[in-house]
Length: 109
Image 1 (cartoon, rainbow, N blue to C red):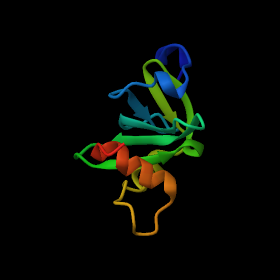
Image 2: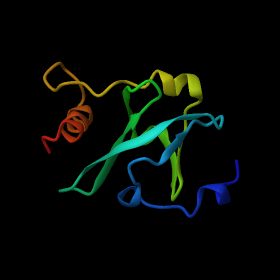
Image 3: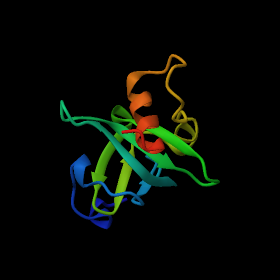
Image 4: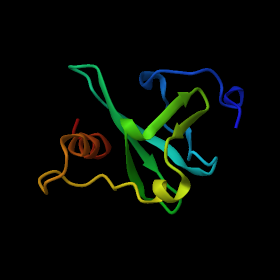
């Protein structure tokens, strides 16, 4: 898919909620729900996606290929994107970035 269809490249701070998320094979796999980043260190952690059927998934920064004005592209195909983890409640052994994702979507941050 031509990047011109997606608009200009953007930084994670400009990525808006509702932006379509596409898998590497071009399949639309969801929409941006929240961008997760560490404000004190200015480090991009990843994105919480809303997926068809009403669920939420977390895409780590390493799983994101590119961000544009009108689309975010994953490095994952549609099958791998379907297996992205759900943001989970802190305290059950998940990585710190998933904890921050949960905080962001639950309004605690």
